[in-house]
Length: 182
Ligand SMILES: Cc1cc2nc3c(=O)[nH]c(=O)nc-3n(C[C@H](O)[C@H](O)[C@H](O)COP(=O)(O)O)c2cc1C
Image 1 (cartoon, helix red, strand yellow):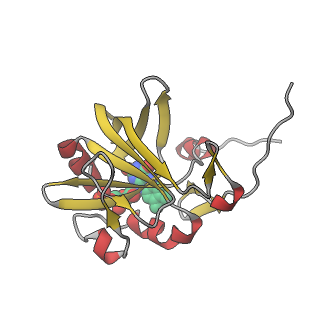
Image 2 (cartoon, rainbow, N blue to C red):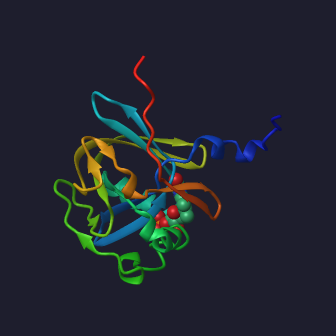
Image 3 (cartoon, rainbow, N blue to C red):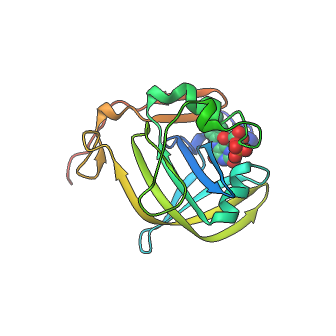
């Protein structure tokens, strides 16, 4: 049996991708924001989209710099993920407050987060204001990942990625499965 899901919770049925920490920088400010609403958009060119709320400090910084980094948080960063998603960079310097380490990225000006498992650097090629979010379409210009956890183009089970279920609920990835060849 299935029952109706309230329309305001419907996106949570679909959106359980890996939680990211978005880093951005402009005007001498650097910032970190927790983000779950991300999607691949195109394979060639390599484009992805992130939806960032109109009022976020991150929206301002990405809007000004045209760049961002998606840092993949492992389960060991659960507390930091929750906090970066609760406070605004307008009020606190999250790199200082949350004790995450900013390291230079390889191509873009926004820093990467040392403690994260992987980093995808993007340059904004399109911005659309859609409802109450900005959809930043980013072209991937560089990427790096822990070589013990991202092997042969896949995350291994030990990676323990965080997935957001909505509100204050997450799960941790665990079992990798492969269907039989047909
Ligand atoms: C798990 C989690 C996922 C989130 N996903 C998003 C998201 O996809 N887009 C968004 O705009 N805000 C999202 N947020 C909320 C922002 O991270 C939060 O408003 C943050 O304080 C904004 O920071 P800023 O003002 O420094 O940019 C999420 C929060 C959490 C805890």
